[in-house]
Amino acid sequence: MQQWPMLARLWQMLLHTKDVFLSPTTPLGVKVALALGLLYTVSPYDLIPEWVPVLGVMDDLALAALLIAWANSFKVPK
Image (cartoon, rainbow, N blue to C red; front, side, top):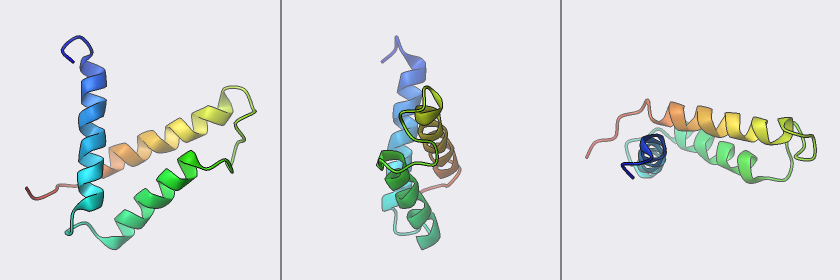
C-alpha cells in the first residue's frame, strides 16, 4: 500500500469507522446515524436517483465521505 498512500489512509479511516460503530463506549445515537447513513448509501431509494448522470452517485459518495470523516472524529479506547 506504499504506492497508494491515499487509498491506505481511506482504508484506515474505514477500519476506524468500524471500530467506532462496534465500540461499547460509542453513544447509541452515533451508531444509529452511522447505520442509517450506510443504509441510505446502499439503498436504491435516494434523494437524487442513480439514473441522474453524475449527481446520482455523487450524493451517495458525499454522504459516505461525511459519515466516515465524522466517525473518525470520535476516539475509541483500545
